[in-house]
Length: 210
Length: 273
Image 1 (tube, chains in turn blue, green):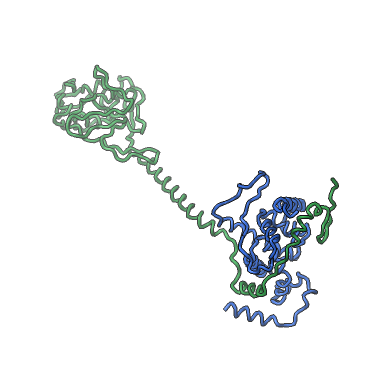
Image 2: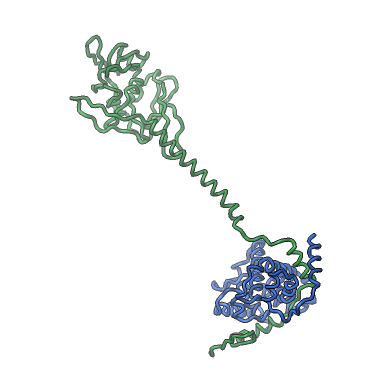
């Protein structure tokens, strides 16, 4: 039944579409609000890979990243009426994705039987939490087939979420500091401070590569 | 150190980034993963299932509501029981009155025991006969929840009375003064509250009725102190240990002598024969 609804919606999609490189995100959102499902499809096409990549770098789990990325678009869809054009849509969708990812991290912590927090702290202000990296192999090993990439990915996954998110958004997603500050609802100085701290931690973990 | 220059722009290395550029470069070297081909299908399928549940306070309510209910019920019972205890105490405590007779010096302020019951006069240790076995039933109450149950044989001032056959013995509570060698009544209610006359008569074995302000003996329990002291039916109790007995209370709880009026004459009877 769900598939039928999905297929019927897909049949409705086969109507003349506006080239998506012309239409802005806000226009697509407005069209979606008015019932244009194709506009929402364009939105998905634009952001599905960046969001998936972002969540993958955050969680170091491809399947989980895809699942949460889909969940992100579902939430965008059902909250479409509440979306305001005061800020950029990319800020909005990345914020939703970040919140979902952090919730997932918290669920993982609750599932962990033995907490390793504090065992490896060398600095009281550090708040570095040792999080066992996900050793599960990717479904597609071609994505990351080099050992260096795996080590880097695992090093990122061991960062505390508050440092992990901004450094991924900056150095992997290429967001500006202002965008990152807007996504995380932080001040500019705090954002830069956290990115700096994250880089310092990664440099320490990956010193063999420098 | 030169102050790094920050750019407001669309990315790219700026002064701040230059300090961490080696790490940035390492992160940028990571390949970008793509969403799977059926990504949109998965999203549409999830949309078809309906909106995701929104966070509510229901999980918290599931815990706090029963706890709140328990606290409310417990408080109600505690309050209710406290009210019952207070009411019971008011009923159990007999009215304390102090009788005065012109010419007779007023006694000191009557004493009450810790639980509010008047102190009852009892003979000296060992003086109770086997027939003095009617229990002083008191329902002791206290403000605490661990109120004592109905006790049989408890003396209001503490201690207990052995209810078995034979000469009952008085078990004094710790710290209670023992009788002195002269046999003075250790239960003298010095400065205590007036004692109900019926309680004293009961211990002595006197069954009397109050009539026109005078206690007329109806009968005397066999082998009681009163019987030993030769109190007879028809006697009018005038005084106990020299204290006039009028009304429903006596100022003292000692009872070594009783003054009765018999055939128009006042007779002092010694109970400790």
